[in-house]
Length: 334
Image 1 (tube, rainbow, N blue to C red):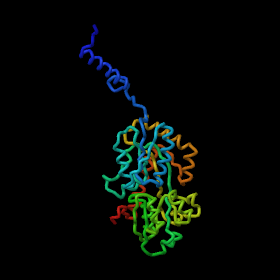
Image 2: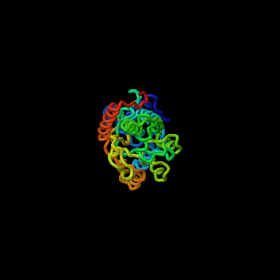
Image 3: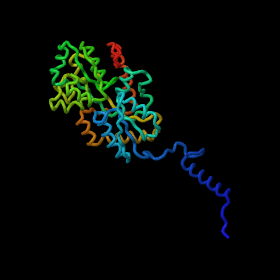
Image 4: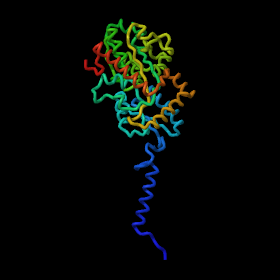
């Protein structure tokens, strides 16, 4: 006769197996504390708060291609433009801190946007874990061919209101151009766009006469002689535009550039951050990524997350001082 185990024996055996499994995973008292599952566990989503085709998007795709190979997992780029990246960044910040969702963070969102929006709309860098800095992207002021401007002196001599596009409210583009116009006593109408690409398109079509755009985005149209570069907003002349004066050289104190970094939700485990940092370092060393930076006129700014936080907070204080000095409202309320 065959003997079948009774219900109590079955339940007892099942409980023992469950306890053994949980103990092995470190999920019960007495288990191996701090043990984590294998990372990455599936695709690592990289969210970009700007439109496809712009500098931030292109950087994200270059980073994703390189880091994805090191991590051994796909890193799809998801574009969610709007509010200079605030909506996308807050969405990622609210996701589980497991490293499966990252955001390509722009310095302007942290250092400048808070000067243009309410406190509850602003993004605080302390709400994120910064993995590493990526690069520096200089701004260039360009004019439409129809405007007749071939130098910034032409703009100051025009003695009329000019239309200018920026890459959005609370961006480095808006701050640089607004401070410049204040210092040069130029009257202008600000037309904000969601990113550099539509702003540049507006200049090409003379919908706006001027726009301040990242150099990498503007360079193809500059080289094609479809827009005219007037000034660069770097401390010195940019090596990619040696014949174009810097704003500082022209007598204006407008030290504004765009910086970018990779960030994760606050509380991401250290071992996950270490893997991401290592993947970025491997990417930075590749010839493909170095060529990408050169092609897009990007200056490497491959610093640690701690250095990013320190520097960006210093820029935030400096920009706040400029806005207060010239009584500027980036929200357009003055």
